[in-house]
Length: 235
Image (cartoon, rainbow, N blue to C red):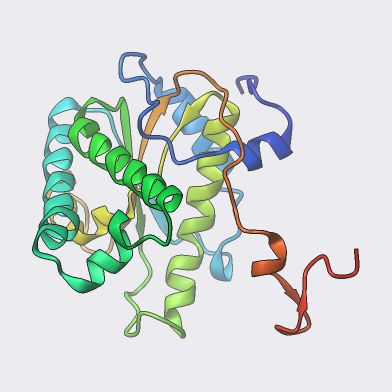
């Protein structure tokens, strides 16, 4: 197993960012380091102690090009076109114009620009990792079987990203690719019960100097014994 370049677990946890602009498209990513990180991610918690995930790593340029085209379609259909037409739900969710202050608006503009950058350059990313679930699709989006359906895949994805970060690589959860799940299956020749949940582009990062992100005060989001006692009150 290769030696991590970042050994401090708190640093890894607090500086694993969604990496788009700082991906190094020119530095090859060996299969061995990807598989090493996948093995670590297999230790993530899983529902019913069943590995109901399937992972497909893509480094073939032709396949990456086809997946890139699908991702471009997702961007246009779910972001660019709805924002241009003023579709209310998308404007509320994504538009910088509805953010409460100039700082928040500028931050959201940077996020959109970063996503578009990845859309435009996805085919250049050294490795694309598709995480799939083999669990039956839940009938309802929330509650019941839905918790287990997503509850195994995303701990795996996050553990994978942490392992990548510790080795000097970066990624981001491109969950929007699930809008094209059937077409992803077709491009990669996947069985019907391998249902794509998210795509994770993988590349070495340009530098390791990622910092903790701005987050809400813990007292605004965490509470003890109900909503009346904010975290940190005892201190």
